Image (cartoon, rainbow over all chains, first blue to last red; front, side, top):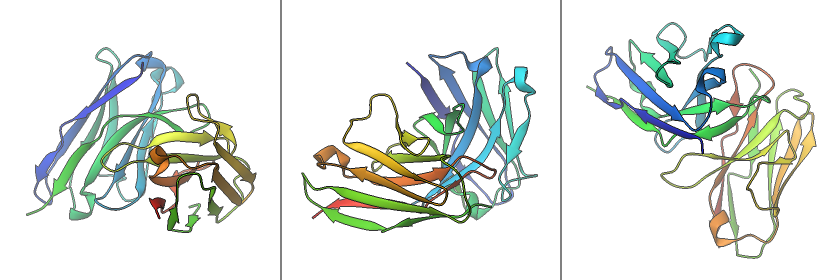
Length: 120
Length: 107
């Protein structure tokens, strides 16, 4: 069974940094393309970014609001996905989910999410 | 960016009803569309992909249709566990974008 467990959320001041982790199990993580998707409180879903498998180049794509501030990386030896978030803004406040990326570019499996609150 | 517009935002329905939710893309996306179900405090769950393909384990009362710019999610014989918010998502281009959501609430 696919399991994704996010951690690392918390309260951070505007301009601060935070690193989220997503521990994966139940599938071959090294072959998987992975995403981060976020949801502001009471709002809809917003795609944050995606990382391909290393075999497919390991490249990343980001949404415009986070490009240049957020970095997605992976450690296949630890079956873990990361989201490094720098220069955080109040509008980055959200629950952050990691998801698998299906061959048809949908989000097959989701973690339970981790809450990031950016506030002074 | 491809904008996704869902309607209505809210649907009041009763157990046993048929519910239809619409999603419109700002440009043609072929059948690269997915539907997700989200219950309060929980992560979304994939229901439909490829516009009409049922995700494994999802009851057959759920169905999807459409191509190009107009899509529909239909829930036949609504069950108590179906009261939730539903989101559509286009999967053809970056950035991946979602509709604003439709909440199916109990009448």
